[in-house]
Length: 160
Image 1 (cartoon, helix red, strand yellow):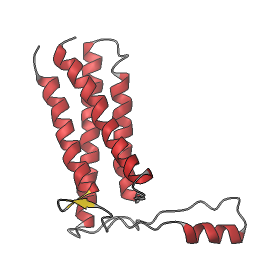
Image 2 (cartoon, helix red, strand yellow; image 1 turned 45 degrees about the horizontal axis):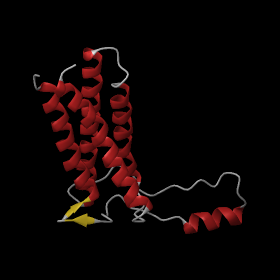
Image 3 (spheres, rainbow, N blue to C red; image 1 turned 135 degrees about the vertical axis):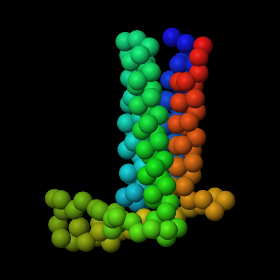
C-alpha cells in the first residue's frame, strides 16, 4: 500500500470524525439544538466514517481505495446538504420541510406529553443559530466537507 493511500485513509477517518465531533460539541456544550436539516448533514458523515473504518480491515489496495473514495463522496454529500441548508438559512430558496423538532410522547400521560412538548426546543431550519464571519454552521460544514473531500481525493490520486 502506498503512503498516499495510507494518508487518504487516515484523512477519510479524521474528516468526518472531526466534523461530527464539532457538531456534537456545539449541541452538547454550546446548547445549539440541531434542526432537521442539521441532522441530515450528519448522516453522510456517519456513513463516511463507517466506510473509512472498513478500509482499515479491507482485503487489498483496490478495496481500500474504493472504500476511501466512497467515504470522500459521502463527505461531499454532507457538504451539498450543507449548501442547501445554508441557502435556506440565508433565504436564497425555500426549504422542503417544516423544520421543527419532533418530540416522542409515546407511553406518556396527556399531562406529561403536554409538558414534554412545551419544554422541547423548536429549532427552525431557516434561521441560523450561530455564525462566524457571516457563515452559518451549515455553511461551515459545506466548506469543511468540500475541503476535506478534496484532500482525500487528492491523496488518492497521488502516486507513491
